[in-house]
Length: 564
Image (cartoon, rainbow, N blue to C red; front, side, top):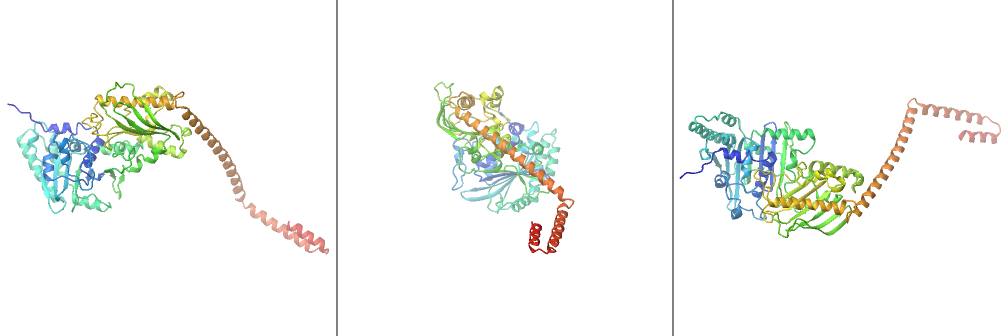
């Protein structure tokens, strides 16, 4: 009997080579933190040291968890009933599992070639010892070796202490020994680059912990009674530096747009995010890291409510939309938009909720002030689009305005007035769940949903919705478009009147500026002072002349004239 064996290269092919991009890898780590009941998941990128530090304050991993789950591919820890065995801290609501393919642990390889893992578990019996391990992903790129030939060193540290440089050196030495043994078993194997990398990789977790403690009010620390999982990755993938530099040059959100809005708390949602995410960039000499994922940079409920138009509702299991459509200041309630291609059967994509706002392209046609229109318009240029959230966690790449998955811009180029909507003026989300939309399945590389029947139905239903909204509410001659046309013309008239007033004010301002300019030009040579001196001299001479008159009446009249 023969057996199927697995080459070590399978890890590289399933992880680094398959994940769509750096942001997708980071998103997967955020999802792992969510599944571990973390309240915070943060990444710090130190440019000078070329180091990425990923931290969360979740329930962490025991030594058995690390060796029996994290280091094992294709485990059942997040599938079916096994997911219920995940420890949940007291007082926290149960969280839906956001991933079950083991992509997260393999995605780390895309962030950097070497990894120091630190994890401290908290369980019903209290805190556990700190688990420490080191991995070099280059081993999984070597040809001709099997997975079971690679030994990963694992240590535990008791008493709530963190490893220092000596502890890491000892762990690295053990790893070197296993690599040298591997090279002896495979004489043709070239491990020089791996050994060179490991020799230069000297992180000091204890020193890093002190660094963060000095700068954070509530540090994500594994010292003492702290729990969670930390990854120290170095050298970081050069793409991180390249992406950040490109974003800085272009002034857009090219790097961060996939990471913002990780947990939905805006669209049809009022509760705070279950996990807060952060990505800080530490430039050389910086005292404070630059926060790239500041929640204030993403959309808010206030902005959604202030949008020119707002559509809110649900799509049932037959593809029919029920909801409200607000056009400027008028709300059309209990609107029904059927999906004409439905055959009377329940859809495979299932029912879902939808909410999105829309901003008029011309500020003269918007109900917002010019300043607010410009501010929201600038944000839409960076972040506009239709997002998808499954159980409140964002599904990539939906929401990126470069990924027009509903072909809204393509139709608009055929007729802007006819199709109305522009993808860069939209901001909203489709809300689904793992239980209610089980056939909407993500690709392994986290680059969207699989192109199955469920996804095709979801897309067709949404395209149908946008087409019908444009036809009924925004297209000239539409059954409910009269109010839109009226208000748009009214806003245009008000904008024109405001523009005329601004021109009048500008004209008066220019005249005043000219008068002030003339005044100051005349004051430069001292003309007012000389005129005042002449006036005093003239008055004095007239009063002296009046005082010499013998007739008192004539003298009094002369004094009055001099006074005037």
